[in-house]
Amino acid sequence: MSSKHELYPSVSATSKHTIHTTTASGKELDLRAEFHRTLYAAADAAAKGRTGLFRRMRRGSDGYPIRCTCRDEVTDEPSRDYYCSDCLGHGYLFDETWIVYNRNDDAPRRWGYYLFYVEYSVEPTSKDFIIEVERDVDGNPVVPTVREHYYRIDEAEDFRADDGRVEYWRLKASLVDRWSLWYGEVQQRT
Ligand SMILES: [Zn+2]
Image 1 (spheres, rainbow, N blue to C red):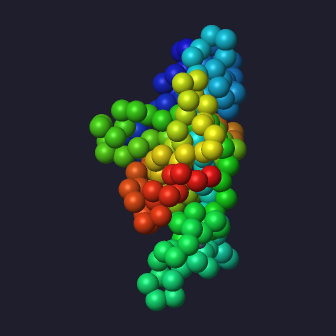
Image 2: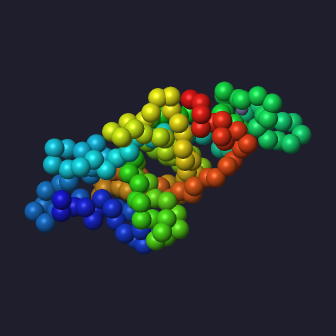
Image 3: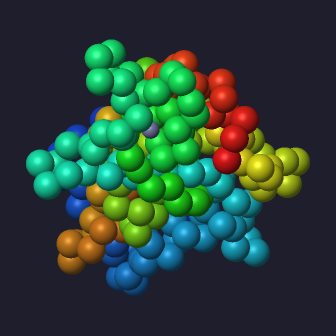
C-alpha cells in the first residue's frame, strides 16, 4: 500500500495534522475506509486491529470525571468493603464499549509512551482509557471478559483531511499499574 506513511505519520510531526489525501494520480483517498480495512483486514491485507475496551469517563458539567458514591468519605478511596459494580473499583463513573484498535508495539521502547490508533467514530479524550483484554488464539476476547492492561490516554490527536473531516485518532497513553486494591478482583470479573 503506497499510502502507509500517510496513515501513520511520523510521531515527531507535531504541527497541525492535516493529511493530504491526494495521491500522485490525483485520486482522493478515503482514509476512514482505509484505516477501517487496516484494522479489520480486507482480502489483501492481514488485520492489524485488536479488540479491546474503550472506557469513557463520565464527566460532570464542570468537565471533571464524576466520582462514584462508593468512595470513602474520609480516605476518598473507592470502597474497600465491597466490590463496587458501578465503577469496578475505579472510583469514577464510566461507560465501556468494545473497539478495535491498532497499537504501535515499538512506541514504548522508542518514545517511552504507548501509541494507539482508533477510528474517527471513537471520539476519545485525554483521561479516558484503553483496556487490553485477554484474547483466545483467534484474537477474540475470552468470556467472561478479563481486563489485563489499563492505558490512560494522555493525549488524543485527531488527524484530519484537507476538508477538515476527522479520519482517525492517535492516542498517546500511559500504562496504569494498580490504581486500586481491587485491581486483582477487577481482572476476574466482568
Ligand atoms: Zn464505585
